[in-house]
Image 1 (cartoon, rainbow, N blue to C red):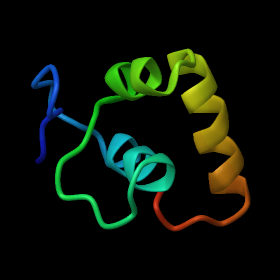
Image 2: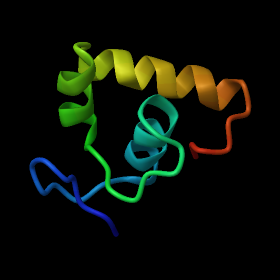
Image 3: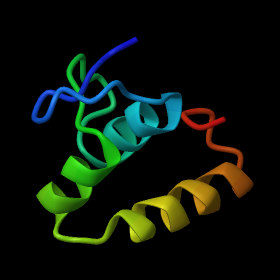
Image 4: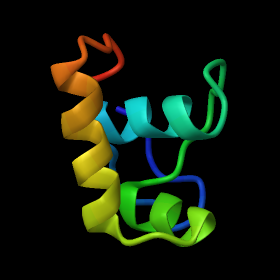
Length: 63
């Protein structure tokens, strides 16, 4: 499994999906949820809310 390019944390499928959705769909390196939230200037909870929204909409980047 991949690890965060900033802090080294092991990533979940949804963290990889969030990075691809918000940063670059073709990315090969990823941020974890906490580092992604900091990069985007939002809370990790906001990332979770968006992941749930995209899942309900059928986005295949998330499980």
